Image (cartoon, rainbow, N blue to C red; front, side, top):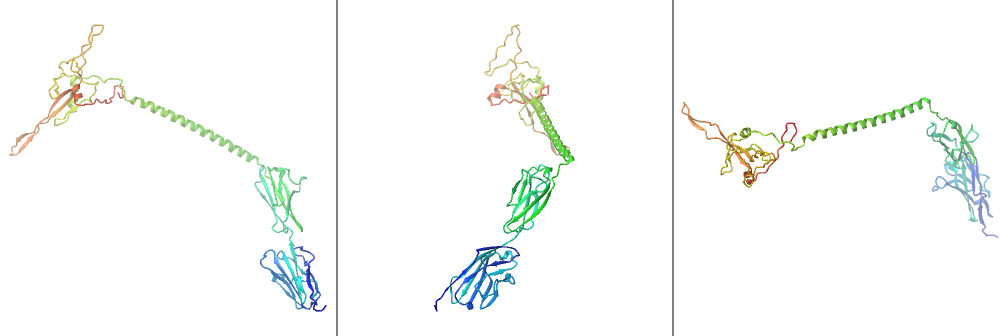
Amino acid sequence: MDGLVCALEVSVSSGSIQVARGQTAVLPCTFTTNAALTNLNVIWMVIPLSNANQPQQVILYQGGQIFGGAPQFYGRVGFAVTMPTTSASIFINNTQLSDTGTYQCLVNNLPDRGVRNIGVIGLTVLVPPSAPLCRIQGSLDVGSDITLTCSSEEGIPRPTYLWEKLDNVPKLPPTATQDQVQGTVTLRNISTVSSGLYQCVASNAIGTSTCLLDLQVIAPHPRSIGLIAGAVATGAVVLVVCIVLVAVALFYWKNKHKEEEEEEIPNEIREDELPPKCSSATKTFHADASSSENDTLTSSNTYNSRYWNDPKANHATDSFTRFSNSNDAHQPPFSRSGSTSARPVYANGGHPSPAPPKTLVVTASTAPSPQEVIRSNGSVGRKPRLPHTRSYAVSQATLERIGAVPVMVPAQSRAGSLV
């Protein structure tokens, strides 16, 4: 029927095509139409796998002419059959990795209207594994753990790796651990038996590639063993010497500390011996030597209830008694109440010597005013006079009334210790 518009439909025979790099890929595309092909328009587009956001034109047929597309396809792309025809298939020579992507075949033929005028097909360019690189990680000394690695820079799809030892019936030692995806194999506690030639095979769907690795385990040298043993022995000797030195130092320190403590013991203040008695004249001499000028009273002995001299003295109203000569007789002792205590009698009929009264000898010096002297030149000078020194004895009772406090002063004994 005239004026009837027929539908145009595009079909592809395969949803995806795989081709090795460098080979030719044919992308099929056909369509059906009832109209003449005078107005046929065919456009091929690609969405690269490397850049999905940038669609590119591959080839164009329009008005009986063919136009090229993106620069990367110049000279490599064309229609598989002479146009115009109902087959819009194209070919791509010398395929590259960049050719991988999704291709669309768009057909228009007026006056037919396309319901399904687009065909979609995927192209994958396969790359065989490149020559892998084999390496050793770890020490080659006996007893160490090492890892053999193998990897290829190229390979689509991703290659798998297989390690094997060429000069051994078992391909790998029983303790070896292999990872075929990562291309590694781990050898533990290696020995000289582990030495040999190892091969890594990288393979994928379209090809294989290999690399060889010569493993030589280093055996310990006898001299090295001797050096290690010597180092261990030397370390042990040094440790023992250090321990001995520390022990000797501690022993010396303890002994020295003990000696210092023993030397400090005789210097303690003790009352283990009374000082020797001395005569009244001697005490008076010491009292006179310690007197001060201008009627200053000084004590020849610190007030102590145990050490008092007993000169015969007459007590004055001012609690000071002028000291008599050392040949005067001793008066009987007295108590704090002033009464005389009875003399005890021993079993043999003897009587102990009376205890001397407890007094303190003090001295006072008096310096009179200098005497005026008329000199030959008429001037008047003063002639100094020698000071007069007086000695007094202060009783214990008097000292207690005035609030004196007894104080013990350490003195040195004949043995050289402080008492």
